[in-house]
Length: 286
Image (cartoon, rainbow, N blue to C red):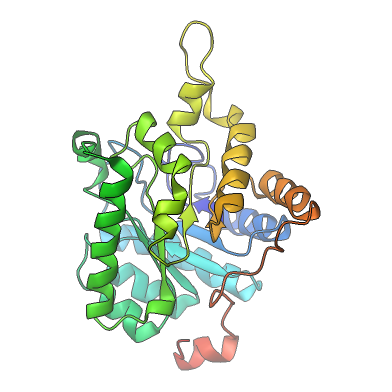
C-alpha cells in the first residue's frame, strides 16, 4: 500500500502533493513501483493534528481518486468519516482504510456493508490531538488484540462480511516507541485473530528515535527508509497481509529479494482490485 497524502500538514509528505497533477503523478509512480493499492488521505492523523471538516477532506481526495482510477490505479481511501468514504467509493476507491476502526463515525459500518468493500480496522483510542494521553496499557499486545476483537465484533454485528475485514495494530496511534516495538515483535498474537493484518511503520517517529544521533537528535523523516524497509519485510515474513509505506520501490525491491529465497509469493490483496468504469458509472459495488 503506497501512501499518498493530499494534505498540507502530514508528518512526512505534507504539502508535497496538494496540487492535483502532482498527486496523480505520484500515485501513478507508486503503482508503477509496485503498489497494489495507493492509499489517499485528505486529513492528517499525525500526533497533535487538528481536525478539518468533512467538506474540505472530500474536496482534497475525490478529484485525486477519480483521476487515479481513470488511470487504472487501484485506490484505497484513508478516512474515518462515513460521508467521505461513501463519496470516495462512488468516485472509484476500492478499499476503506479507517484509522479509527469505526469508532469515529458509527455510520461507517453501514457504508462498508452496503458497498461490500474491504475495510481496514485500525486500533485507535482517540483523535490525534489527544492520542498521546491515551498510551496506557497493561499489556499492549493483549490490550490491542482485545480492542481490535471488539471492533471486529461490532462490524460483524452491523452486517459487514467477515471476509471484508482487515486489522491494523495502529503503530504510533496512542502508542509509545516501546509499545510499537512490542507489537512488532508479537505480531503472531494479533494474527491469531484470524484476519489479514496491515502493518504501517513507514518513517514513523519511533524509527527516528531508534536511529538517533550521538546527541539524541532523532533521524530526520526522509532518512528512515532503510528502517522502514526492514520493519516491513519482517512484518510480511511474520504473516502480515500488507505493508503501508511511503517509498514503495525500496520495500518492493526488498520483498522481491525475500520472495526469491523461496518464501511464499506475494499476492494482490483479495477484493482490492480496481472496479471497472462501467461499475463506477452505474454505482455498482463489489
